[in-house]
Length: 209
Ligand code: GLN
Image (cartoon, rainbow, N blue to C red; front, side):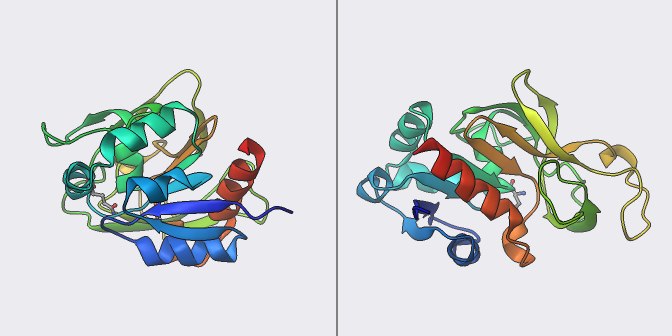
C-alpha cells in the first residue's frame, strides 16, 4: 500500500500527538508552517488548540488563502476540536474577527458543552469503524449545531454518558461528521491512543490520490 504524506498544521495546539497518531496509522506525517510545505502534502490535519489563536497565526504565517485554495481544490482534511471549528462554514459563539477556512457545510457551536465544563468524556458509537465504541475526550469542545444536506453524521453524544451522566442539552448532538474528503471530530482521538479515526483519514487520503 502506498504511504501518503499528511501535513499537520503546526501553528499551535496538539501537533506532536497528531504526527504520532498519523505515523502509527501508516502515513508519513510532516508539520506544516509554510506555504511550500503545504504544497507537498496529500492531506492536512488541523489539530485541537484554540481556534481564535490559530486563526490569527494563519494570517501571520500567510497560510489562510493558500489553505483555503487547497481545500477548494479538494485536499482531504481532518479537523479535531478547534480544527472542526476552522473547517466549518459557519460558527456560533465565535469571535467576530476569527477566520473560517470553510469547506465543511455545517454550523458549529464553539465551547458548546458550556464554559464551566472544561472536559467531558464518554464512549461513542462511530459509524463505519469496526472494533466497538470509541472513547472520546472533549476539551472545551464544539458540537455540530446543524449539518448540511451532504454531511454524514458519524457519531453523536448519547443520552447518558458511559460514566453515567445525563448528557442533557448535549444529547444527540453530532460530534463526528464527514463530507466527501473532509472529516471532523469535536473530540481528540490523538489523545487516547485509539488510532481508528486517523486510520480512517489515512484511507480517505489514499482514496483521493
Ligand atoms: N474551545 C477551543 C476553540 O474555540 C477548542 C478547544 C480544543 O481544541 N480543545 O478553539
